[in-house]
Length: 209
Image 1 (cartoon, rainbow, N blue to C red):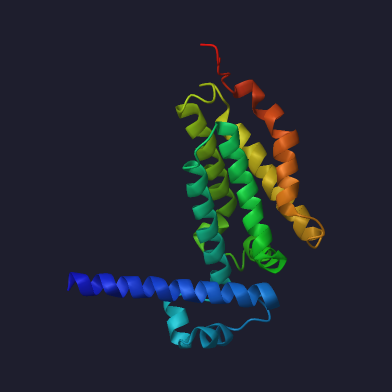
Image 2: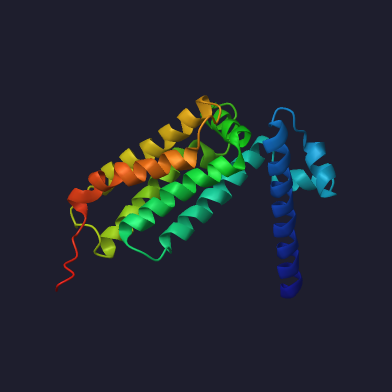
């Protein structure tokens, strides 16, 4: 029984993943408004009922895609092997790069559905900004624990500022219709301005010690 339940769960995870991957391709090409549940399920070879086993409505697919993606980025950044500034830069640049590679349409759908309270029914997505801010805090707190940053580093204030930067860049990229590279804009910020922001809190390593 236990093995059967495990196999069932594995099959369910594969089905959900297939629905998300298929929906992502279609939405990136056509936009959410021009994508139907039937189109997604037909491309997956499953019934509409299967779709509603995992999602209440098609907007939830956009939320699920963003949730899975950002969680994976955070986990990779936390395990990234390197100095604190490299880890933080990796997180911010990878965050931006994933959004850009997923496409402008998907980003626009996510922004629209998140800021509209009538669409953001999922509690997670109503709190998406808070979740990303907590991830940024997690990056900075790990720097303090590892001795890369001073004990009195203002974790929350820095996380607020850096989250504002990355969200502001995303919104500007959205409004510009993807006229430039979101990822490259973040790389420029990390190279030119991030070191000055973090310098007062970094613990200098004495190579001669």
